Length: 494
Image (tube, rainbow, N blue to C red):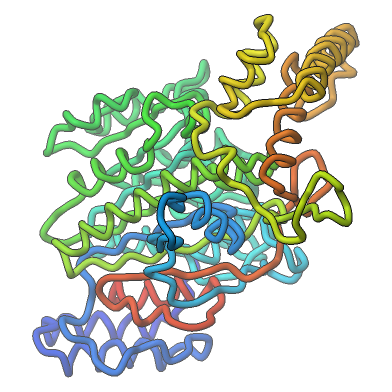
C-alpha cells in the first residue's frame, strides 16, 4: 500500500509514542508536530493546545450529495409553522467551515462519489470511479484501515449497499466502483477490516457463485437481516447487518422511517471499547433523491440524517472524548429553492416563494405512490390522500395519461429482442407516473433542479463542514476534502 505520509514520519511517531507512552501534553504535541513537519503536503492543522491529545472515538458522517441547498431546504422543511421564528437545525448549530470537492484533474472539476470518498478517506485525489486508489491505480491507506491497525474498533453504517462507493472507499481498493461483486469479495479476501457493517446488499453478499454471509459467519461474525436484530447483538462477536437487497428503502417507505438513526445507535453501543473506535456513517440516499429530482424523498432522507446527528449530540455530551465530523462528498442535482416567479408562471403570486408545507406530511415516497397508482384504479380524492395535498382535475388527468403511456412504453420495450435491451434503466409501468408526481410536487413547492438529464448530475460547488466534540476546532474554515482525511489521520496518531 502507498501511505500519504513519509516512512520517516511514521517511524518518528512509532518511536515517540513508544518512548513517551503519550503521558504528557508536551510529548503528545511534539509527536503530532513531528508528523506534520514531515509532509510538505500537510498544512499546519494543529490547534494551539491539545489537552488529552487524541480523541478516543471518531465518527465521520457523510451526507451523500448533501450540498448547501439541501441543508437550507431542510431548515425550512423542518420549521414549525406555528411559531414566529424559523427554528435552528442541528446543521446550523455545528457549521464550522466548507470544503472543495474536485477530483484529480484527469477527471475535470466535478467529482463522483468514489473519488470524493477516496479523498475523504485517504487524503489523496483520484479519478472518478476509483475506490481507495490513486491516479496510478496504487492502493492508498484509509483512515479506517489505520484506525484498525491502532487497535480501535471500526464500523460502517450506510443506507446504500455496504459495497457502494462511499463505504467501499474506506474499506477496500478497486479500479472501478461498479465492480460490486469484486468489492464485496474483497471484504473477506483482503482481510476483514471492520467489526461492524450495517446497510443493504443481499444480492451482492448472497450469490449463486459465493455466499459471503456464510463466510462472515465462519469468521466469527453475528449476522442479522432485520432491524429487530439490532437490539440483540451478542457483545462478544463482530456483526454484519444487511437489511435490503441493494440500498435500503426510502426513509418514507421503510418500516423504520429513522433507519440510519436506529442503526447508528446500535453501532455505537456495539463499538464502544477501551481503545475507542472509528465509525463511518452515511446518509447515502440524499444523493439518490437528488439524482431522481425528488424533493420529498430528499427531505425525508435529510430528516433521518438530522435525527442521527441529534443523537450524536447526546452521545458526545456523555462521551466528550468523541469527535464528530460531518460533510458531503458533493452536491447533487442542482437543487434550487424557488424556481418559478410571477414573470415565468402567472400562477405564482410572488417573486420569492418556496413552499415545503406541501411535503411535510407525506408518509409515502413518490415512487411508492406511483406504483400504487399503476396497480390500482384510484379517484382524485384517493390520490390526494396519498400525496397528503389536494391535486387539481388537470393534475389527475396528467397522472392517468402518464399511467397509460408508461404501460405502452414498458410493453413496447419488452417486445424488443433481448439484444436490443440496452437501457440502463428500462421503462417500467410506473416510470412516467413517478415523473409526473415529481413534476406536480415541484410545482406545488416551487422547487427546481439544475440538471436536465434523466439522472441528475453532481455539481462542483463547495460543501459545508460541520463538527463538534473533541478537537472539532481543527475543521474550522475552508479546506479541501483531502485535508479532512489528513486531519483525521493526525487525530488517529499518524
